[in-house]
Amino acid sequence: MIRVLVNGAAGRMGSEVVRSVLAEDGLELCGGVDIGAAGKDLGEVIGIGHNGMTIDKTLKDAFAKGKPDVIVDFTSPKVIYENAKYVLENGVNIVIGTTGLTAKQREELAGIAEKTGANGLVAPNFSLGAVLLMKVSAEISKYMPNAEIIELHHNHKYDAPSGTAKLTAEKMAAARTMEPEADETKESLPGVRGGKYEGITIHSVRLPGYVAHQEVLFGGYGEILTLRHDSLDRKSFMPGVMLACKKCMTVKGFVYGLENYLE
View: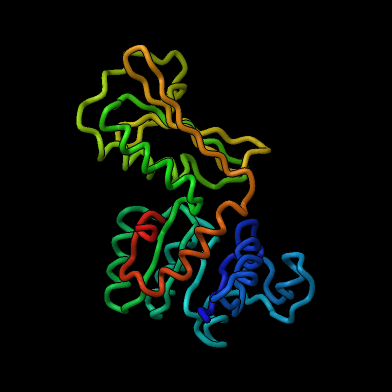
């Protein structure tokens, strides 16, 4: 059994991870950490009834009871780097769904993981459908370099653009074999054309009711190709998270993107 500790256990994603770990063969929930719900019963907090597992305030408190095999972190961009650094320095594997890590920070964490022998995954999106959309978008970019991304999320999301949109843009830009045609539009309202990342325009929508959605629009001569993925419930991310908890035990290194665990 792989012992899993969930950091951010009382949050929207964290509580879903807790429920999924409890139901997953081969995984054993060994605790939860959440500064806002510390001291409370984990089962009661996530709505499954009293289970006698007390939520810890910090990772240090949880580790004092015994180290897990893997940490799943869905906390905040403000604390994710220090969280990941602490976990890896203690030689514990980590699965990160929290956005906000810079490329430099990921590189530094990879160095720590190499020294301690711990493994890790940073995934902007754990939905298998979203990962496939990225893969297909990169392939299309070889032949249709003019493209834009529209990503839509709930209004409580911390960051814009989403990590998924940024990773999609990275993969598309790297796959291009020809330069896109120039955008000759002049903005009469600054920012109305969106933001550029890796040379690809991204538009971020934040409204109540959305969960996680992304469109990639390709324009060619007399034709438009549109790809869209919709996560309608946070349960859509759980198969990917459960897969990551198992794979990080054997896939060496600290990697970026769930696709590294699908190959």
